[in-house]
Image 1 (cartoon, rainbow, N blue to C red):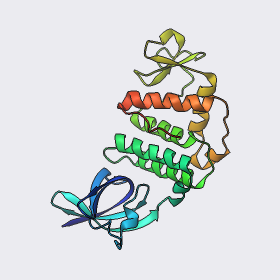
Image 2 (image 1 turned 180 degrees about the vertical axis):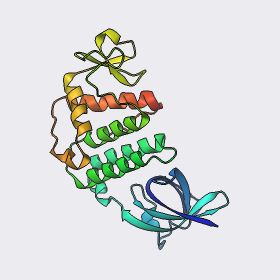
Image 3 (image 1 turned 90 degrees about the vertical axis):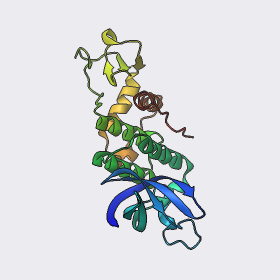
Image 4 (image 1 turned 90 degrees about the horizontal axis):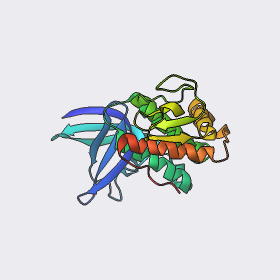
Length: 236
């Protein structure tokens, strides 16, 4: 049997048979993969700690019959404190769902952003929406969408009033807006720029206030749904 090791995060799992589980990993080396953990739901299972969502570690895999079987895990972090704050837990779960819905082959940039996002939610006091907003901005950037320019993406004129064109995933001016455009307030645009330019480790110092932060989240959610066909998980 061929063996390999991947650095990965558990994004979800499905119970099978009496005590087995299929888990879905997002890994640095292989992207999204499904692997089998045998007997892991047993009361005395040695690896039961490594089957839960958010667990981040080095997973040792054996390939057999066109599937991977987990034989050992070196846990790096299980982000346990997320379970102590319901709002953070839901936001982190929404980020895992985004990865589950969009991940394919290996993308080191997205993997690193995922780890940074989970660490920030778990260990920093950051306001609601900020971490998922930054993760979505990073995801769109990895997809090739960079839409926080001060110029219209269609005619290159300096932006005054701003509209987000869902068709092209970019910001345009009033002269270039279409039926697929939604208006962007100055507060929303400012919130997006601030979150995008702030490192994860400094997001706790950001306090935007007002409706800008809610509008920014809603705009990113609309763009995510338009780009992928999936809605964001609801957050409380």
